[in-house]
Structures are given as C-alpha cells and as structure tokens.
View 1 (cartoon, rainbow, N blue to C red):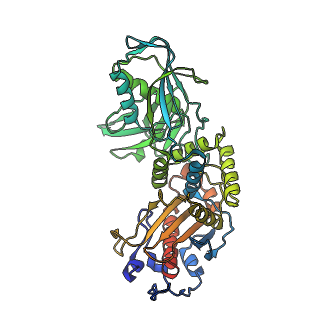
View 2: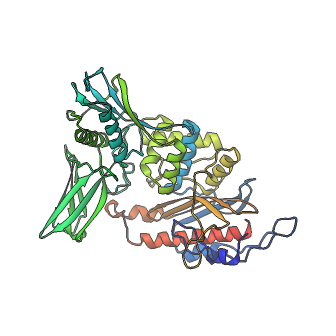
View 3: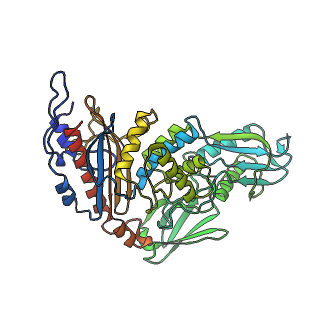
Length: 486
C-alpha cells in the first residue's frame, strides 16, 4: 500500500511541501490477513511545532472520514484565519444554492429589431457575473455577431453590470497593485486585470497595456501606465476617467510584464467589446453604463462552463474573483461582507459549525474558522453525498529528489491557503486500501501579519521562509497520520 520509500520521501506536490517522512515516528505496519493494521503509538507532535518556529498558533484535526471520529487534534476549537481554504466552503455553498447545472452567461441584447444589419435601437452588453470570461471568448462572441450580419446600432451602446454589486477590491488590507485583489462586478474579464508590458528602448521605455488573450490582443485606453525615475514606491495609482498607474523604473530591469487590477470592470469589458466589434466591422458608439437592464431581444451570448468545472478551476488556481462572484451569486446579498455572513449562517444551519467569514475567498485577514469545524464540514458533506472530492486537486506525492511519483497509490485531495504569516491545508488522505482520513491544519500569526504595512504585503520580509516552515509542518503531520492511521 505505502512503501517505506514513498512515505519517507513523499511530499505534497503543488504546494511546495517538504518531505512528508520527516515527521514520521514509525513505518506503516502491514495489514494482517483479515484485519486492519494495529494502531501505531505516536509521540507528542509538540516537538514538530516547536521545530517549525512559526510563532502565533497552530491547530489541527485528523478524523476518520467515514465515522468522523477524531484521531488526533491540537486546539481544534481555536479560531484562525482560513486564507484560501475558505474557498472549499464557498464551493460547497455554491453547489448547494445554485446547483451543478448552473452556468454564468454574458449576453448581447437589442432593444429593437435588426434591419439591414443595424439594431433599430440600443445594443446592450449585459453581464451575468461570469468570473471566468476571457478576451478570446468575448472575441468569439463578437465574431458570431459579425457573421450573423450585424453592423451596428442606430442607438446607443449600453453596458449593464448590475447582476452583482460593485466592489472596488476584495480586501482593504491588500496592496493596491496586486492583481489577485480584484474588483467585483456583474461584468468581468480576464479576472478584472489588464496586461502591462514594458521594454527598455535606448534611454526610454516602450509600454503597452492590453487585454490580451491567446488569439485577440485589444489595446486598452482606460488604463495608462507611466514609468518614473525612482526607487520607491514601486507603484502609485490615481482613479479618474483614466486609471493612472506609475511604476518605479528601479524595479523594472530591461523588460517584463505583469497583470494589474482594474477598478471599473464594467467599463473595461465594454471598451474591449467595442474594440473587438470595430475590428469585425461592427460600429458602436462609446459605451454608457445603465443601472437598470433594458428589455430587449437576445442576439448573442457566451456561457461559462458548468458550475462544478468553474469551482474545480477556482480550487486549483485559487482565483479570488471566482470565489467572490460565485458566493455573491449564491447568496443574492448585495454587499460582500453581508454575503459572507449569509454563507456563515448556512454553515451553521447545515453543519452545526460556527465560522466567522468576512468574504468568500479568504483573501482578507479577518475571517476565522476552526480546524475542528472544517474537518466536521468535510466529513459531513462527504457522508451526505455532496462532498468536494470530485473537484479537489490531487496534490500528489514526490520522492526524496523532489520528483513527482507517477501513479502514487496515496491521494491527498486538498485545498491550501496562504496569506502573510498564515497557512492552511484541509482535505482528504485517500489510500488505495485502509482508512480514509479527513484533516484540517491551520497556522497563523495574525499579529505579525497586521504589523506589516499594507504597501509591503505583497512580499514581506520573512514571509517566504515562514510559509516554507508552515508547509513543512503540514507535510510532517500528513506523513505521520498516513503512516499511523491510514
């Protein structure tokens, strides 16, 4: 089932954990004929915690996945920030409230008949809160409209983003320039980011801002980036008719690129749609935002994948915008914190567990969950046939050289989460034979996190090494449990 080399050398792929075997106190025992392995006595894990030198607090629970019986725990009722492990709760919530067949749709409406290729009235781009919409999909939608003979509209080009409330950024305690702290809107594109590229050209810089996909690369005019001769601050931002960024030249080298957030996603999507339309011979006036969706005939649409696939990608890539759009859609509440409270209420009603969630992604630092509560949610959801195992990523096992072991017999289906000086991991340990386990591990030093100035929180001093130690501890614990209980 589990060879000594696998256990001693394995570690969780995809989350940069160290060798799982480093914390194993004894090798897994063989299964006697007709029975289960005898329990392996374990020493106290406090030495592992002390060796990690994390500061703050560490909490965990490992339980029998079938019965929910707790096999080992440390501070199971201590509330700690979940980071992106919160997305596992959001996925359960969305599947329960929206159903597995739910798809997000972005539509094009005509308020009058189409005659001679012209809409006799207004053309409306109506968002449905799709967080996964990409430029290539929008370009293909425009191409279908052009192929149908559409040439323009006699009236206005309108855009509507009211399917979801507007939020300029998920978490106020994150730096302004990080692309993962996206704005939320009923119209989304490229996770509400623009692509900024720079090249050194003699004594000057060449700068491009676009909404690139694989096949379409429309320029964006509503965002402008200037390079300034300075060392700090790295970025400045000014919100106006044009979103103005400046970047410190001292940090740029000879060239590179990164994604920057946009704070008016609806206007961004409308501009890109109009640019793509113009390239296809469809002439539209500059877009105007409308607060109420006008009645009209649908003449085109693009849909997301079914909800389970959207959630699978959210859990795999930890996309914060997807979590917020999905959670807001599921709750129907018009503000982010109120929507997160509604999800906390659902957890209490469905699982009897007290969580204090302030968003759906875990990006903010004020949410609190417990290891015991998280394990209970996972166990009960699986028992009731609505668990996350089909969409959780198998993070895999690696050998002692750091290489992925192909066809490893043990699966670790889990969701990780990381903030500055906060780390979490929760999921299932699934051996080919023997007992399946559910676990939740949370480590956090919120006081140290809060002491870092917001402008430095993209990469604070000591943050990477702290995260490595936290993940090493997670690996040691999972190895310990797989060997003793699995």
